[in-house]
Length: 519
Image (cartoon, rainbow, N blue to C red; front, side, top):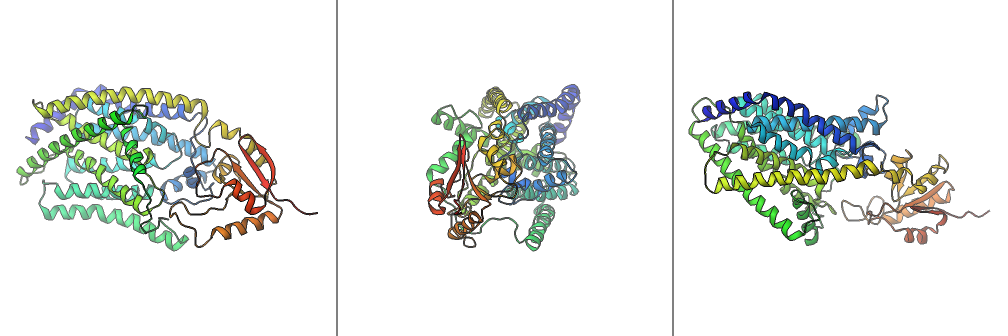
């Protein structure tokens, strides 16, 4: 049966060389074009982007993407320009890898093309690739790891498992949400009935050892050299409320239809789609593994469609990890940015499943037709939503690279302050990026990740530090109206009162304060 399926898929592959070449070239070009249209004012800069670039008040955590940025900057290229070049390369590369993995695992060019399109033109994909953020590189690591696992499923050569382990380790150095990828693949290897249990355990070790060596090796070295690594507290500090969980669920429902659709039908459609997809994924996985078990003692044939199983498992291991993370870290929520990796892997899993379903009647075939119809609807919806977002980014720019930040009257006034001035601000990252001047955070009541006061630098100590700098005559406090999300910092009114601040100038988008000096 497996030999017949492999021969059938090979015949299909040989029958569509023109489409294969078109998609292999066309999708990276499309992704690159969307990226360039979205970044005509420069790559989008978010607060985390300035941390990666070393332009913010807080340091970065996961090292891979910041290292890539700084290696580029070491050549003499402006770091934002380097980020733009890296972003362009990642946009094209991720589109290429998505096509290659789906084409190999699904065996059908039309399904692989539509699945790739649902990733490349998704509004979340286009928006995140247009930012100097680590998510695009994280997707590159996921796709590279899945490509190596696909090669293992095709050849049964265990050297590819070592490559999978390296991919997991590198993914974990891009974002600390990499371990769920390893968990999903390990779970799949444990139930891979093509092999006996002892072989499965060794296969898990093949991926665990290189991934652990890469991540733990970095963590130990980082702690030794600079005294920090993950930067996360190991306590139960999560403060998610029921409303926060509902908001997180809402982020998942936006995969299918936009937020403008009322919540009730949007949630119902998502849950029905999830149930149908899970049913077909289980059907596909059980069917494939049972056949593999029956032919266990024969030479292992290629069975690339099994890749759908770890891709589907990643949905659960990743969300489970995020639930754990939100229980440990305060003020951490599952937004659309954090949910994006599992959108990509879920689309890939279902593309493979739908392409490999046998042509039978009954409930399975009806679900197949319904999900294919939904995929067509999602493709049209994605095109419309992405066109709107790209047009907005084209006109206005993204994040701190947006035109209103470049033309900010307050930042223009800050630029005229003495070069040796000490700057405190609620938006030091905006000052750091736009003006390329260092700035400090204004005093904060609590730390964002813990929800507690910083015991090493208390609020009172922060006030005293700012007061000392202000009394020195070369310090200023800058409030930016556009930075309104830092609830943990002291308010403008409070600092005016506590530090006896004197207003130097108030402009349309902010204010600059100092202190009066007696003559």
